[in-house]
Each structure stands twice: as structure tokens, then as C-alpha cells.
Image (cartoon, rainbow, N blue to C red; front, top):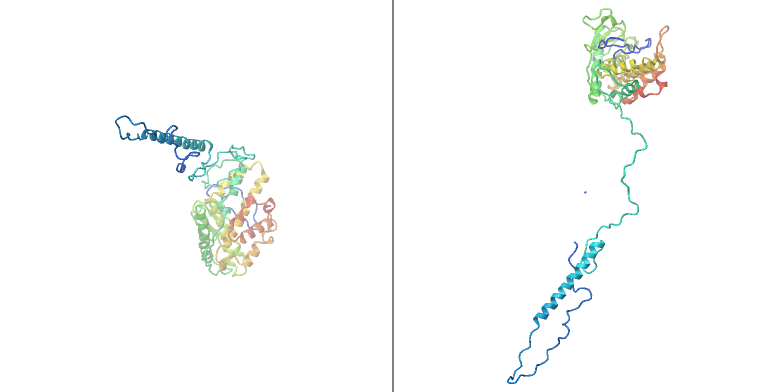
Length: 395
């Protein structure tokens, strides 16, 4: 395992050996009117009709005037009033006590019935019969040297929740690649890689910003082997035909002759093939800055006692790179996308078959499958989630 921060892992070219594990990577109404029920006008008190004329006393020629019964009238009226009040009060009491509605006159507001429903609804909490769903893992950006807690399965679930394998990737409307001959110089290679880098920077910067992930565009330095630029990281890890991404200084060192672009025989295919090459090599810095590499490294260590699953994790990690790189290369204007000829080459098993005498831990059919997934994704990054794919697709 390389030293954290030194960066770099080899792109999965056809002649690659086993991918080096661990490398960066809510009224009642008025009272009832009229007489009380069963009563008419007040009757005269019994024993009182028209008063009889008394006999004239001697010496009197005119009888005295009759007395007026004001007291009796007052008493009668009082009795009637009391009777009316008693009847009215009784009706009110009955109405209130029975929840009913008086019927002698005035309007009323209907009252809500207090009779319980036939099938009352119970509000008693019930105990769930199933376990609550497991909370989805949260993907967080961590420092490359941070420890990752949990089991291998926990880390595997975090890798499956990688933001850049969720949602969509927008396209850039600007990208112009210079014509580049088959036999190109270091200066011409620098020009086409800088142009391709400007295109990919716009694509990846938007994808990272949409997910609140950090984005650091690398500086590209073309050199001629073996003249490795001075002050570069760990020169002992440089190879003649393999681009080297140094995470500590954010520089991608590219030797002249590296990449599939250098192997094209048609100059029309050279620029777009280099764009795909560069897209693949961008993944190294992306996995470092977004913490995919630290999580993968932790998973690799937790699987030391399960070599078979450890190798499977390695394949899933590498194949995701191929898919993401291919998806990004198609989010530029059509004229700068890998041509149909280039896509046919990259999505063929023959292209990924290792040369004689070389070995690989990933089946050519798996490489071809994931390149095609990316090229045909139209920005749907869920198609690049190798961590949830069937085992036969990551053989």
C-alpha cells in the first residue's frame, strides 16, 4: 500500500496486473311564547261574582260605591306568573337533562348526540409487528488519515451511498478540443489535455457542487520520460507509460506516450480518446478529495481475513472508476465526446483482453460492461453504483 497522500493508481489498461489495493484513490332560543300549556285567561276567584246590593241603612238614600278587588287581581296575576315560570323552567330542565330540544315555539340549535357510536374507534397504541427499517448510512467526507469505524458491511454500505453514484450529472455546453496528429509532440499533447481538462472541470465542478462535495481541479504537466519534473512526489513510483496523480500537490504528471490516445492511427480519434483517458485519470483525485479512497482502504483492511471478498471489493472499486470516467466523457458537446468508433473500442471485450503474458483480476466482459454503462448513462450516475450490482457483473 502506498503512503497516504502520495496518490496514484494505475488506470485499468488491458495489460494491467491486479489493481493495487489501498492506493488513492380545531341558545337555546328565546323562551316559549303564549300561555302555558293547558291554561287560558285567568279565572275569577271562587265566591266572587257581581257584588250584591246591601240593604240601605236608615237615613241613607244612596248605597255606598262597590269596593274594587285590586288585591285579588294582584294575587291572581302573581300566581299565574309563578305558574308560567315553573312550567317554563321545567321544560328547560327536561331539555337540558335529556339533551332534547323543546318543541313549544322558538327555534333551537341542534345538539350533538352524546350516544356513543356503535363501533367506537380505539386509540390505544399497538405494538408494531415488524422491526423498524434500518437507517441508511450517511456518507461524509473525512480526512485520508481518519479511522473508519464499523464492520466491513458498514463500510460497504457507505461506499454504496457514494454521492457521485447517486442522481444525475449535468452537461457542459462548451468544449473545444484542438486537432492533434497521431505523431504529436509533448506541446501538442499538453494543449489537448489542457483543453480536455477545462471541459471535464466544468462537468465535475457542477456535479460536486450539487452534492456539497469538494472539487479541486488538477494541474496537468506533460513530460518526456525519463525526465521526471523536479520536486514532484515520490519519483520512485513513476512509470514510463502511466500517468501519475500526486494528491499532495494536486498535479497529474503525464508522460508522452501514455494513454489510449497515443495508440490511435486516425488523427480524428486522437483528441476524443485523450479526453476519455484524462477522464479516467481524473477519478484518482476525485476519490481522494471526496473520501472514496479512505473508505475503500478501510474496507480493504477489514476484509484481510476474507481474501475472496477482498478481491471482490477491489473489482467493484476499479470498475466504478471505468463507469464514472465514461459517464463524464459523454457530458460534453457531441463534437468533443468520444466518437462512435472510440466507444465501440472501449466497450468491447477484445479491447480489455490482456496481452499475452499479462494477468488481470477483472474479466474483460466486466470492464466492457461498466464502460458501456457509463457511455450510455446520459448522466444517470446510479448506473455506476458497482457496490449494489449483482456479483456476476463485477467478476
